Length: 529
Image (cartoon, rainbow, N blue to C red):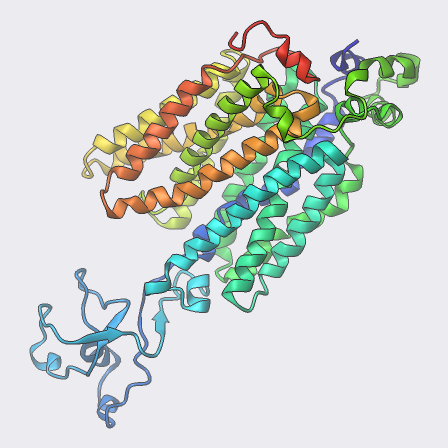
């Protein structure tokens, strides 16, 4: 008997599974809010040198504010005041015969900066003057955060396969909540950066464990439904981030706002079941029966003891794997696991780098940043619904490859479209964003089905690491625009296309039972079906 046979007896898709998805929705809403939070809290508002300290013998007292700026701050190429320079001495002659071609000795801002607070009341840049020669520090916080996510993905995979999905999930809830709220009270840039690192470390466990718990409790026919519908919480959180950022303009309050749902998650954790698959794979038969009984009663299938004996559950658990601790080394010890690990790592890197390369460039459409972020988030909903239909018709492998290749095609089209056709460029960009999200939705479900239960969390920890590596590289790719405008898009297009082709080398998992052991993977006759 296989675990799928037990799910048939207790209903592999009933009120129990739906309730589990609801419980895991609140924490998953938090994920996009934090992952893309830097788009708003690290925003760089218009600014100029602060000249309020200048007096020059009282002459300034007779000048209007505009005249003071004219004689103190040089004009930039766009006709506005420069952000990082001021005249070494006031140039009063500009009041009589001002000229945009006028040149005089300039110096860096001497008394700080004045910021335009019409859009943001406070950001990291305005809090600690992260502008001019220090402006790169705003993006550094994002890199530090994702470095924490990267390290956390490795730790989460190990802890989850060793101590269980449920316990690791609680630890992730508490860690993300404590450090998330603490970062809102940071009194220095260094403290904030450290707290963001640990926030990312905790959040990655939520993402990986919630999707695995969802998939491991449903039957084969409904895995794609659970995977796609459950991931809608990401899209909801993404859209809510645009609304929260619009309503809460202070970075400290915004950070607390997007962290608050974790309080609900902690309170409802006691209702979340452990994965019965994991319990059986680790020889914890009685505990597995406890949760299976609970599932059967919740789904109104009666008492499990009347249908399946404890001895039957014991037979499901593979004696060869009992009391064995699996590590990341098990991902590369055998030939097909080694090949699977290599291919999924490349695909995850490509999916993440492409998705975040598009998502972090919210100024690329030339629209209001709140509107751009909301549009990019809203397009994810129809993209998820579309991919749900395709997953059960076309299959996982073709969907994964197709969405990545089409994303690359959209990026390629925009490379060659002239700037004058901005309406068409916006449509193509939004379509590409939707396809990149469809690729992300697919890869979560697909990877969960590819790795066996005994190392599934380690596998997802490794692929999550590759994903965060792609995310960390994405901002660096976008910075290459300073050298050659089309270069970032060419790189992202190439990454999407290559990872799409690599996805074609993976096996199909449509209507296949989840592999329980490494032997299940190795005993397949071919890797590509």
